Length: 454
Figure 1 (cartoon, rainbow, N blue to C red):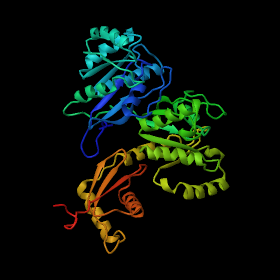
Figure 2: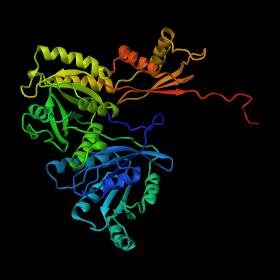
Figure 3: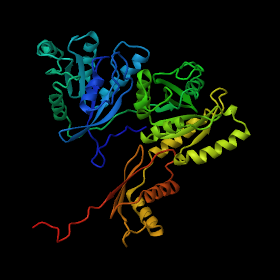
């Protein structure tokens, strides 16, 4: 897989800033402070952030990608080792590294080992002494000069003290030509998502050939996302088994609130979302909500109808009716009928995931796209307004993952006509398994001679 390039719309790659450090030094609090909103999960226990999670950020007119990472522990094993690998990967693929220490604790052996890796990274490193909530603590951080990473920046991410100065330093460290790189080659990431007790953990265990996740009839057994590398159809995939989503995040509380946030993070860090649905039961509002989450996150999408061994002919008839009625908006997503219990057709999910990934990364040349849109308008023009018919002046595909199109037009386009264009894009080019992002940019009306100021 080619390296992903993080771009600023039509202006090319933006710098990538990785926030790294050992567990519980306040990395996610710092990320939230920079973003100005509560985006990263913050909890007073180590290991809450497990994967690198990228957010769009801006300071002083400069856009950049801010990557939150799991706590770095050099001698970690198990899930800790996976966190460490993600943090080290963020170091290698970032343009600027923000290394966070706890000013109240000082330098630990783990910090010293991290510093040795940072020296080898050959990237700008900004040393942050977080939780420096008083001038006395600021005086104590002078010893951090000995790490050889330059001047330590005192900061209180919780209260915002020193955040503006830190952002100035980050922007100043941006390279002239950012890499925009967020990930390296490796297994494609699939998030297994769905409402509670739909069979996600059973499916993961069947694919892995071992008990990677706890399986219980009680809904909600899985709370945290669990990463597993499994081989499906002779290809390695990274599967993330997530907690079932019961409620919208804003209505959830306690452990369920954090589980919902982590599930959303798992979807956003994946390339493909496989939404498991219980084929033996009617489609629910919860099912619709999970599908919407994946679509809104812009992930490639596969619908897996589990428990097919419990479906008789009568249920199949009604299920087809439900799909036609309630899943029409995602008719483009590949469907697989499986049984996690018996193993029926689970290998076919790899074929569906590959198909969705192809659609997610598909690109049309500018010349081909503009000829196509011209022919489409000639055959089926936009409905007229006051005798005028808005037209596309120029079209461009400005991105992939998911495919994103910008149409420069003579005027606003009706939502219905936008849906018509999207549908025809699918009919003529495919984009199977991927959302399509269509942006209309109407030309600004010229000022009349009467209204122009002299």
